[in-house]
Length: 147
Image (cartoon, rainbow, N blue to C red; front, top):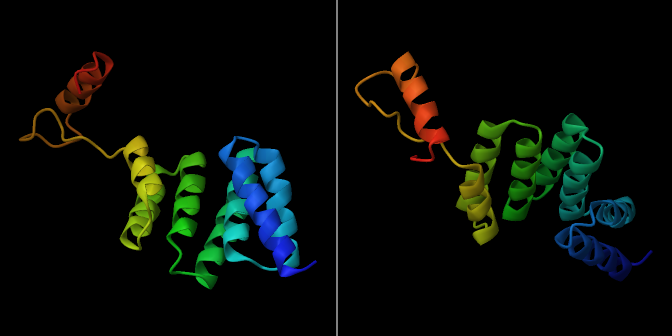
């Protein structure tokens, strides 16, 4: 396959993923990654594998490998952050997404960070965060949607 076909598969995969067709996107990225070890295609393939197969350790390894080959691409950090978030590893997701924003990621990474969120300050700042009063009042305020 020529390089133009690889780019075509990659573009089809991005479009399919944008429309929510994860299985079709995974197939497109598999074709693109098989022919030419394209770091962005590998990163998107890792994201699709995490969403469809739930093999988070393999997906994280593949996404980290893509970042090692192309560390200046902020999109790769965004995909790795999404994989971490899908795996339930919120702190790592926030850390990687922040690194992507530092490297120039766009509004999508900032929106992803806002969606994941960070910890809010405790209700009683003079008490430690783990104090029972802070824990239960914080849960109550969150349930009442006052925080």
